[in-house]
Length: 130
Image 1 (cartoon, rainbow, N blue to C red):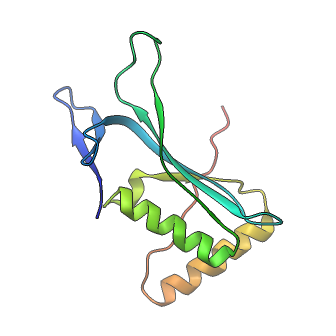
Image 2 (image 1 turned 60 degrees about the vertical axis):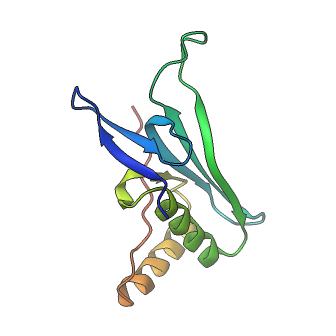
């Protein structure tokens, strides 16, 4: 079941609505640390849509987190979390280290295998240096 719905505010700006908690988020992102000598780590976090006036800032909420040591299972778990929180894959962008050639090659192999079986691949979003 997908618990996040994309909505449009009256001003035309998109936001994300959590159907379980009724919270509204301005953004949802995923992050990962590749499994190497330790288990890999996945997290999905959301930034509240509205600022907390007392803090003059937005809350960041952890929606899900998981560990896994086997790369194939790790990437499958990332896809499962992505789908659980969103019916449309582009909503939750996953960020991770794209400089690890070994891990990027494993990701490429994983995605080629999935595409050959007509399954959705897993994409990492490149870090945007400003």
